[in-house]
Length: 320
Image 1: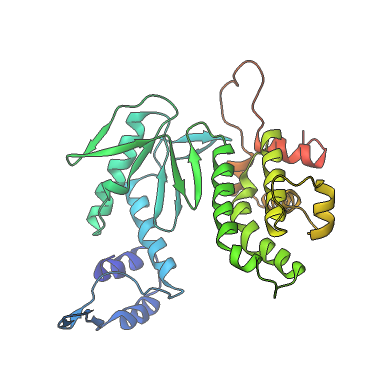
Image 2: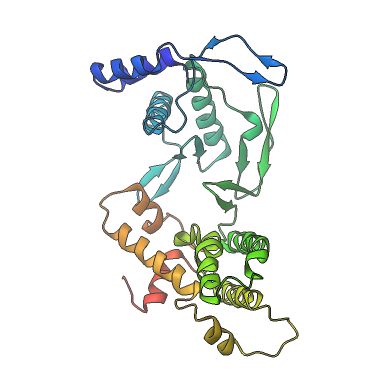
């Protein structure tokens, strides 16, 4: 982010002049030097970027990105995915941007518009970090002589997005990550100086959050329920140092650890809280994405469970 361009963008976005002046004074005269094992470099001016750790920095970057998207005409573009009658062609979180379209030509058009407008304000599209995911066959793309990678899934905001929309891959990934965390804490769990209730609290505070991150948007089928339940019992068995050959009932293990609320119950609580949050919103993008319908006919045969189906099943009610 070029500072001179940033001040112009703030003015065009309607930020009052006195606030822009305060920001300019805060960023004026910045200098830095780089220290290496061979000594330090000469001092040099910093004319790009925002302050790391400053509460204003995300706002400044968001304004910069919003300016690019507006100039690219994404709001008026017909390209995108229609959900509940609303056209959605981009989702942004921090510096991660996802463009969406119903055809390859539309997607390429959106990408080139964003690329051109970004270059006008000093930002460059990183082809190495750009990926394409399609629900069907797609030809490879080349931009400025570089091939854009085509993938069947990608990580966005810490969650895995797959072409088939099945969250079972994401759940398996989280359970695998949690196993690694549990294994890394073995030295603590083996300690005789730490009481069992404290160890249980450590599991719930340091291990379970790895699994439940992003669970609000998951659609859990019976197989996932069984997998999550089995994993929780694996955690308690590892905590109690119970070998896999031992014949212990699940009830006796839960009675000894007394974990209180189960991992599945924690997930359900978060999902219902999120659902309540959505229902309280009026005309929000979040609500449209989670509760809105997509045009077209569903495939014949047994239908896949949808997120809203999972919510209503867990509450044993109907919203229709």
